[in-house]
Figure: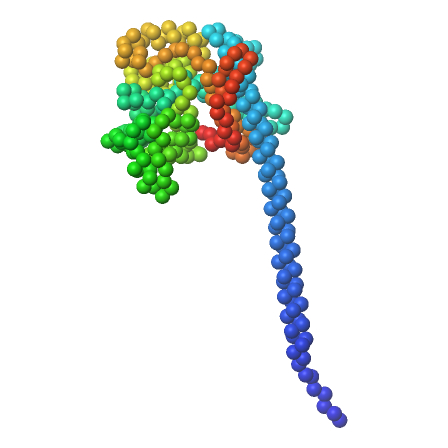
Length: 325
């Protein structure tokens, strides 16, 4: 009787390994393709939502321009609209809807802000107060103001706590001091001591100072009829009681505010008068945000316009998307 023996065939083992390798490769390929498709789908959805939010923000911007026209047409009048809220140009937030989406907008009269291009050693106290009230130390505020003045003056001689080109050229990403006026507020990020958090806020609870500053107002005085509470608090001589009264009287009409300011103790004194005005402005910044269901997922636009006539305006500045408070 002949014994049968089972012999191991190495060719079969190699074939099995090849099959397993091919299956593994195909599995990885299929998973990669699936992830790529999902990524493309999510990207498409995100892109679509971003476009929709942008259009909603543009709707908010147009609504803001419409309200500005209405305000300018009805200057020096008590504006009472039946079943509608009165829009103020002092940074209050308003909202609306367009289709299935929503938008919010805020209007800022540029005359109610601190103009950094008019900043000088003689009026620096207002910006100093603003920065200290914001939470900076006196030394930090002083250094920032010195650096702003050095940035826009014509020479390369830095103030005690300031900075000129020699400082900026020593940075890893070097550049020179501008030695002329600011062209945009974002340019402040180039100045020694100014951080994105100071300018734009931390994205959570703390807002930045960008909406308290301007380069567009026509003089170095602050229009107390449209200035924010933060700016009013930075004006020398303005106590909390005075600030609350000014803000309350805004809803009563422009004449009441002007009369009240003229009656303030020391209002006729140059010490206060040199900082304030009640003159109207024709330059406004609109900060508009568009969103669908979740307000945290939004698109923001910041624009500055000047009203030339009753039915015409010019855009001085437009940023899309913009970082807003």
